Length: 465
Image (cartoon, rainbow, N blue to C red; front, side, top):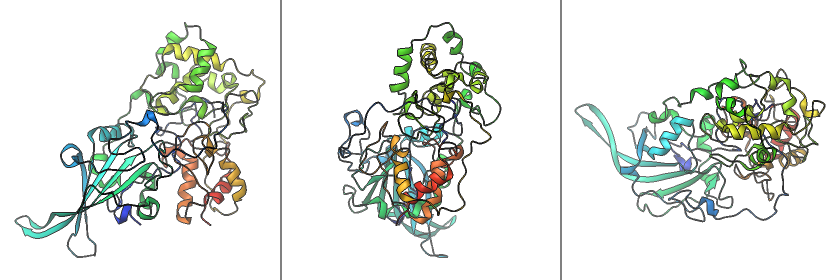
């Protein structure tokens, strides 16, 4: 894709976070991007993958990840959630039809986590959800038959982990830490393995990040967006005038960009998450439109000669870096208007140092052929080819088996034959991720980057035997 098109894109111990509401972000590759296919810039990996086993303790930079998580991933119940957290909703549960309500499930989160959800449409790294499950007392009051809370049965705790910090801890995975505390002892966490104890109840809400958001009135306010980000990306509607969107472009035009500084920005600049430009787009003289020069398969098209593409030059500016600025806001978590004038000028100078108009990556993207289609049947894949593909594509941001992520650990670890038959369609949708409706944090692979046969091969490797 061009720089103006985004890379591509049994109950939680029987109850979950709303009679089983939980959040699961399988294949969560990259953070923060909703409904706009902007563009990120990326390049070949600068180092070989390490074969060391994944760490089981929090990195030093993550020591402040959560006050409710210890260095090995042990989870504690917030002692003050009843008085310090925000109540976001309660669900009444009838265990048997036509019998009185037998349980009340009240859910709480921190004020800052709620604010981030309403702003961004998803929970931030470190967010905490606590569900208080109580028995009920049923009686007739002046208002009619009533059920109100009695003794606590259990508390559930979920803590958002966008980095996959504890790959060897069975309480962590799919983007969250999962904890259970019995009412008789709020200090003792009793869950053993979230995969067997938590996952199945949440299949109905995969598309809402595995949380029953419809049950929580406080989560149902429309996300707030900055006006400057509400524009269609190239190939998805009217052509955006990026120069008008980003006034710092006027200043950038008067600056002489520094190629070396632009390259450093491309390689290592982060904003509010771990994403860098090179994670999503290769910048390599060996790039073609179908293959990255370093052998990886990133979700975004290589950009070695992207500055030569006329569909970038005609998009409202011939400064290719402005497309990257869209990604700074939508994928890297930056606030509008994004990059500074100096950063824009430097990145533009770096992009223009790549290939000329005859290079393979100078070709325009045929958006008429770029699609995010899902096969009607998931048979016909080859698991051995799928494993090889996972080690080319998924490994850009995930640990795959015993192989470490090559560019950034932005998603949970992946294992072959780990998805049941009921999960395969959602898996395919998360890989394609059309319009970010299936995974707000993962850029989707279009048909032009990962064709349907390759998708079937990947699914064959992921599918349980």
